[in-house]
Length: 325
Image (tube, rainbow, N blue to C red):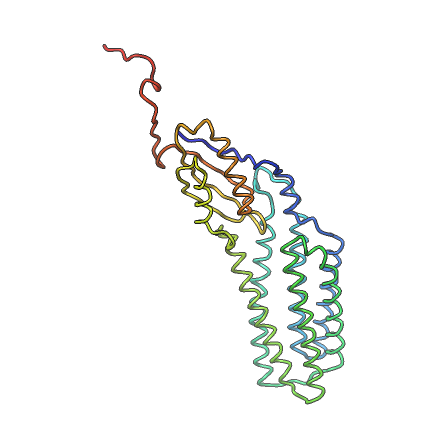
């Protein structure tokens, strides 16, 4: 005999509350302002890089564009995530953020490779750099990064995605400092090679960031077990329930950046069927409190998978006497 869980949430948990939290209840005004500010400074740095001939400034502009894309995706995701699940998107729209991040990071990785190519060519054939525009634009970029960091500091406390963006903004500030130092070294010693070397360093950092984030987003899209969850520990925890004989066919995956789902077969004795709802609730509370798994689908069994043995005596199954012809 089998019983199916009909997606009841653990006690004290509201699906609407989860969607509200997943949408990232942050200051929209600050987020919009941060996107606008970073986009503006990216455009300014691109123009300054072209006018000054500084490849380092162009690479820093690319880095700022990465931040703008990240913040833009975060903003769009929070708008889309407020849409309620429907018949077509039964889990909601939270995964749109993962898909957008995957596309942005993939394109960013390709552009970073192009930057390395341009830097190698610049090392072979050094070009003069207009230090005035380079230093002015880099200083503006540093001020913009510091302003953005201050804007995101408070809302980043309640959002993992914004927290990573906040840390990234801080690294951008350090990158702007590096561009300014490069300009000063060129002005002081005439080392034109400092500019392409610095652009290579920034490009490698962008590649490292892109590849590491691409791996994480790909794992989410491939429905992999989240790295912070040990599926063996989940099985052991479920089987600690004295009324549970066995847990198998356990699958754990991420619905989006924040939501984790589970489905599993749970084997219990036939004599415990009248306690199935209590066992189910106990397991769901355990999954939520210990592993942060708030959405689970449980199928209950009283025998081996694929078989449906009934341990009741024949008289209980068929109480009517057999007729003999």
